[in-house]
Image (cartoon, rainbow, N blue to C red; front, side, top):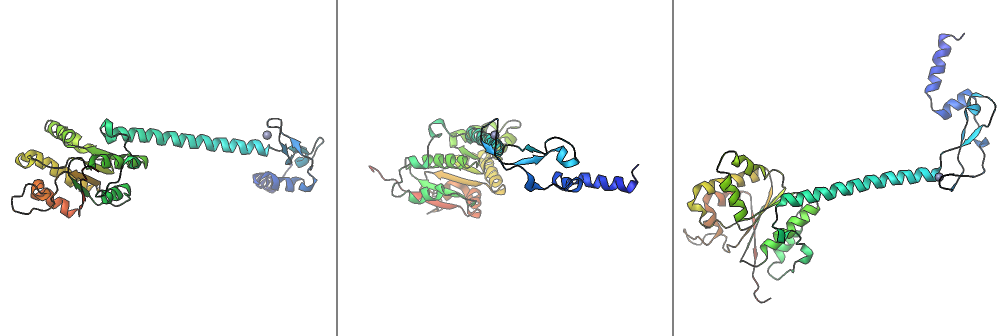
Length: 285
Ligand SMILES: [Zn+2]
């Protein structure tokens, strides 16, 4: 019969790892392990590791050492597991990018434009450099330039690069946008309109010109509300406008961005310290 203290000692011993336990029950001299290499029956490669058998540990007849686990097979298994995980990650990234492309809402003809495809013309360098290197900076940017200087293509390349970096973007242009604004006039449309701005980190707002909008105050109110929300959510907004003047020259200068935007939106842009970058048209280049 064993005493309680003997049982306690045995329990404590069982908790130790095999090697320690082996040393307690029957001292194992690991130098006694065979040194001859053995061949793995799975991969045919040679190993030299052995493990003590239960006979070696607890006393008894029979072989004292058995072959351990094949080091080569174990390594291969670990590598395969790692590869599976990497592929899963790649697949996840791929499907995330696809869904970001869908949500970015770029027009089809702009979906594949890359910075590498763009010709950097003189007069477009600053805009190109600024948009190809967007980091964490949330400053708003407004590209100003005549039609056909490549503002939309630059916005598209920006969208595609950012999506590649897994940063969600959203592309808006006047016709797309005001269809949404019109629809938002009924029912729960407004909430729906606002909700599309939640996901994107970067909003690319093309054709930002406000022609005639000042006369339709309800549209103006919506646009102002959206800009307020974008500022509050600290989104990066990049506008493109074909208006060339930034500041009003005269009180009623409707050809300036300030004149077109109206007081409140202009003030919103200023509060956000919007950076204005001109893109100069180079005809016959
Ligand atoms: Zn093997």
